Length: 221
Ligand code: DX5
Ligand code: ZN
Image 1 (cartoon, protein in one colour):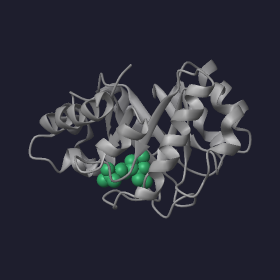
Image 2 (cartoon, protein in one colour):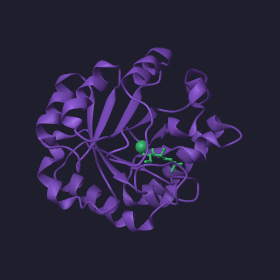
Image 3 (cartoon, helix red, strand yellow):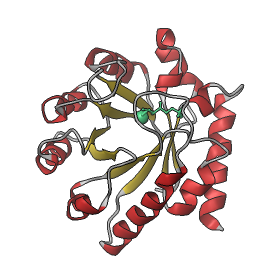
């Protein structure tokens, strides 16, 4: 698939989501951060907003669920129109069953890891997933500083994906910008979430292309 960019709608104008989606039509995905005020100390949007946004844009939705009990709630996001649904490893009771359910409903299944959660215990599950998300900030808020300590985990995850010969996408989320995207791509990430970097840019479409070019350059060098 190559490099993909998924702007986080968390940094957009929530009163104008459809128009904001059009501002980033150069993106491969729209990243929608669903937060429940329990798994993370912040509350954002849920099923009705995802459903409305899915109808208002042609760009596929990449829903990042920072919620407790994703086993119960995540499948509903596929029904609401999300093309990719990522639950957190720390919150899921039965990640294999959940990933299979998401795939059976027709979405890509993603699993996210907080900065302190290691990848190694999940090695045998990787074949059940379409995407692994390595958080590069503590989940909950946009605009935080990129945590360099997560880069070795990106690298180790890429090595495990290669070891098992999988097609898994490797996403990074948090503090991704022109300053940090190259080190993520160099470590093996291929799907890049960027909130502030894209929506605070004067020209979000141009920023998406700049981010893509930086990641591609890091990949080819
Ligand atoms: C944080 C969210 C991120 C966030 C990224 O918990 O998962 O998707 O919106 O925002 P930036 O790119 O500003 O760090
Ligand atoms: Zn996110």
